Amino acid sequence: MPRLDRLPQLNRNNLLMLPVQINDTAPFTRPTRPLSACRLAIVTTAGLHRRDDRPFGPADQTYRVIPSDTPAADIIQSHTSLGFDRVPTMRDVNISFPIDRVRELVARGELGTVAPRCYSFMGAQRDLKRIEGETGPEVGRRLRSEGVDLALITPT
Amino acid sequence: MVREHTEKTKPPRALFVPFPFGYAMGRPNDPELQHRVLRAALDLFAEPAGPVLRDFPDDAEPGDQPPAPVQASGIPTTAGVPEDPALETTQMRRYHEQWLAASGGRTAFGLSGIPATRFRGVVRFIQSFAAGEDAELDERPADVPLPNFIRYCADDWKTLYFEGHMAMKPAAGGDEIARWFWAETAAGQLLRRVRDRLDASDDPRWKAAAFGVAR
Image (cartoon, rainbow over all chains, first blue to last red):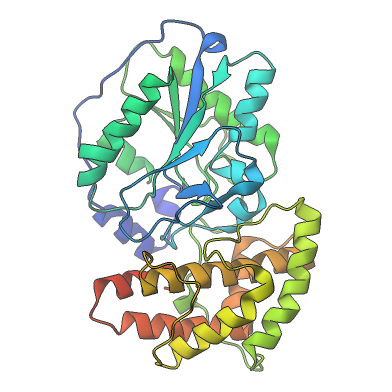
């Protein structure tokens, strides 16, 4: 993501005014097996979903399930923010949802497996109460029940 | 999300990448760079303790795009913009079909649920809304509010143009395409009026849609 000092003043001000959760530390879990035996799921905040799924609306704190075998060509974006360039995603959805790259790592034996499902939220949100209290933990529980060792979280 | 946010939020493992907004994995259709970014992220797995914030060990930003996109409000309209957005849309659909053929069917189109072959009806709907009329379209699902549906139609319409433009000029970047769309197309001028009507409303849902159509 761009360095703050390379952005126009307006963008800098908007970003610095964005309410951000402040934490002193973070829960940290050490891996119990090598990467080549791990299961990975992508969790994105790029507002992506399957073409026939419900698009995201303004301030939408719900999430969408993207089965990992969804062809990249069937994944589209309904993120409401205009603060990012959509053209790279039009050209190649791997720019924020690197599902083809992850599959290639599995094929090479560097990563164990891709989880059956990936998950998508919309980013650039100010009110996060429902994500923090409901939809975020729900996705966490789903990842755990699906045997996921690693969540690769990608923005747009 | 910029580095300063991550420093405060302190996720367990984070990788800072020096790319423009919209380019999280580096560059589209550049699997080699995307793999380097992915590998740098997965290397954080081996860190003994956290939270940890690392910088992607490659300072080569794709320098051909601005870090954040230009907004419609910052692009003046040029003289001689076509007057008929429906006719223009029909022309752009031909280029969009070329895009589909070249991309193997990959398209960002599809938020409105209305196929491109019936998009002239959408254009009439958008014209009617921009003119201040009680615009409605039978295809709007009952559970999708009008301003949201207008935004989905606007996004699909922009996709036809943006992807069509990429078929015409494959090397064009996002900045060039946005400047063309908002300065030189009838669609761009009509969406500015849609934005103005949405933004003039007191309803926060309408204002939010205005933000999504064109800032």
